[in-house]
Length: 506
Image (cartoon, rainbow, N blue to C red; front, side, top):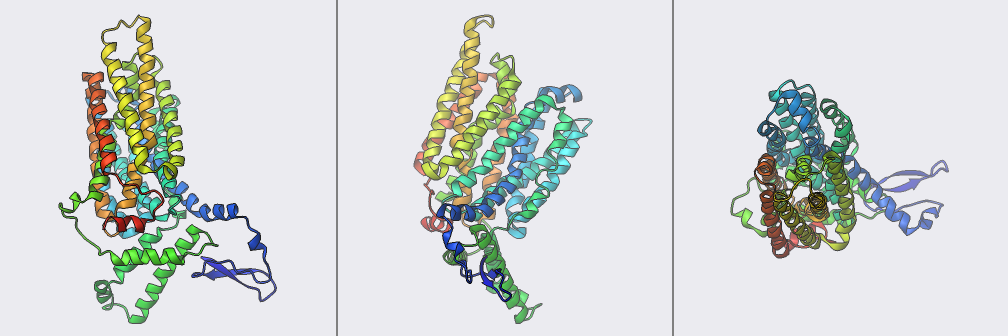
C-alpha cells in the first residue's frame, strides 16, 4: 500500500492510502532526494524476500533428488536391499510426486499458493521421519512416497507463485531461483552425505519450510481470480441465499483491499500500481473459468510447448545422472566417486546461478537452444568414452585419461542442463498458462514431468548395468530432439507481462 501522512500532533505519521502509490510527506521533501537506484532496490525487497522464503521448498525438492546418491551403499548394506529394490526406492519419490502433481493444481486453486506450500510441508516432514526410523524396505518406501507427494505440490506451486508476484523485468531471474534452490538442495545432500549417517541425514531436512511460508504474501493474481470467481453471477446467486447485499458488498470490498494491499507491498510503497491493478482485473475478467480440459485443448500450441518441455527435461536423463552419479563415476574408473559427485553438485549450483542472471538478458528460447546443444555434445562424448573404455586395460595410463574425460563430459552435461533446460521449462509453464485453467493444465504438465522422471530414475541404474555407453546414447538422442523442439515451438516471453503473453496466444 502507499501512504499519506497526518500530523495532528506535529509528528510524521503514515497511514494506508491504497490507490495512489505516491509518497505524501507533509512539511518534508526528504523523499524527493531518494536516488533512483535506491528506489529500485526498495521496490524489489518484498518480492525478493518472498522468493527467498518459498525457495526453501525447492531445496527440499533437490535434497530428495540428491539423497539417493550418497546413501546407496549404506542403505543397501543396513537394510539388505538389492539393486532393483534400491532403484525402486529412488523412483518412489517420483510416484508420490505424480500424486502430488495431480492434486497440486486444485489445492493451489482453492486454498491459495501460500496455503498449498504450507500443506506440502506436512507430508514432507512425516516422510523424512519415517525414512529416518525405517527398519525394513516397507517403511523406507512409505516415507519416500510421502515426501515425494509434498515435493510434487512444491514443484508446481513455487514457480507459479514466483511468476505471479514478480515484476516483468525480474520474472525470469526470480523464476530461475526455483531451479537454483533445487541444485542447492542436491549439493547439500551430496556434501552432508559424506559425513552424516543416512538416518540423521533424513532428519536434517525435516524442519525446512514449515514455519517460513506463513510470512509470505499471497499471490495478488490468485486473490483477484478468487474474487472474480466468488462474485461471478453464479457465485452471487448462491451467496445471496445466506448473506444480505450489504455483507456481500463488504466482503467484496475486503477481498479487493487484500488484493491491492498485497500487490502494493510487493511492488514497493512508492510505486503507483493503478495500471497493473487494472490490467490484472481486466485479464481475469475476460477469461472464462473452465472446470475441465478437453484432450483437443492439449493440441494447442501453448500446452504442447509446456508439456513437451517438461517431458524432454526429464527424458534427457539428468535425474538418472544425479541420482546415481556415484555409480556412474565408479563405472568410469574414478576412485573418489563421492568427491566427484560433490564437485558436480557444486558446478550445477554455479551454472544455475549464471542462468539466473542470464534469463532476463539472453531470453528463454536462446538459453534452451544453447543448453540442449551443450548437453547433446557432452553426452555424445561420454557415450563414446564408455564404449572405448571396455576395450582398454584398467592398468593403462590411457584408461585414467578416459576417466578424467568422462568426468568432464558429465560436468559439461550438468552445466548445459543448468543453463537452460533446468530452469526455463518451469518459468515457461508459469508464464504462458492462463490463470483460469492454470491449475488444471499445470497439473497435467507437472504430472507428465514426474512420470518421465519416474521412468528415468527407475531405469537408469538398470540401464547403466546393461550398458553405460548405450544409456548415454539414448540421452544424447533426446537432447538433440530438444534442440529442434526449442527452435521451432518455444516462444520468447522475455520482457512481457503475463497479460501480454496470454493475449499473444488468442
